Length: 160
Image (cartoon, rainbow, N blue to C red; front, side, top):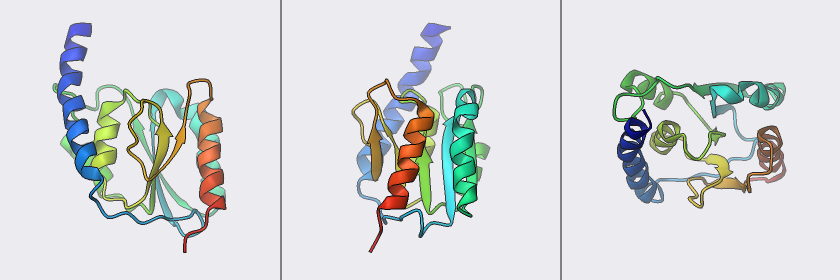
């Protein structure tokens, strides 16, 4: 099974790398949390309990929160997200897209890089910065704390 996983990761990792190179050319538009209405949040199913308080905090601020949860089995044999899922996620309106997935969750990184949101935030873990705004993680921080920090900075920073 591990050999199959590594083989599968090869294709999706390569596609993510190619998308990351061209993503720097996309139109960007900083949004403060105050300016945003629709927020898409990517996270893994195993982290649902840790992410829920942050989602509730965003809802308490009267934001339309669209959680996108990754669980194994939502990809094809080459590791790419199933097209129906990709189409539904890309159709979501997002003033801000927040990515809380781990660095090795390539299907979600692929979806992140394809999504038309003009402002993307996330946790920088593996040296690659795929975001317009990122929080660096050393591995010691807990996910709820990092999500809380992203929300804090998006509230604090004002756009012109």
